Length: 313
Image (cartoon, rainbow, N blue to C red):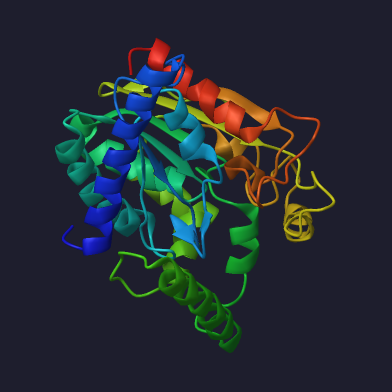
């Protein structure tokens, strides 16, 4: 990708990774998170890398780098299909491989970032050491199914799509997104409802469970697959997003994080599917306001980096 912002971000990631390794040498880092291959973070729907000084992955890249990990934060279309987002991410992965000097990467995708990273691993497994999804709707979201009940081509659909596209455009502008694609909320909706997810899974089945709520293959085409998620929509009374996620949870008849059901989040090795976290807690949002009665999300990412390290990844 020739976009200047993307190239700058990837180069900055390399500089920060090298800086972290220098500091580790000077101040005695434990190397706890020092994976063999770089960790690449991919955001979900309406996501970003950093916006108005706030990181999407709040405090997570810094914590991983502190103990040796080389971390790159990517940005793709806020609203679009899994395939198009995947193509955008693939271009960035190719640049990360070239810049880092490493042959592969460890992909981590939150929410719609889950199918996005799966696409990259399916079409270019030679560039991917592992795929980890966090709160991703691999078999669709009941919230998306509920929204899809609005008649196609109706005025209601047009109004909702327009409002959502406007939100995506605002995030695109405020974050300086490298994507040149127009916002496509209906494309996102078709990717995230159960029918669209089933079509995607038929084309890219790697790591997807064949049973209703089981685990998927742990390793496919040399790529390791992992997943984890939360099932507590309401976790912190000071977090303004809890109300929205609590409302979203009403669309489900199974434990969920407010936007994604427990079983839908399963892919590959299921590390855990019942953290006391909601959909935004899974990326340590909003501003670190998560449950006081659960492992800190940043610690969960550190533990997973160590898991990847111990697996030689």
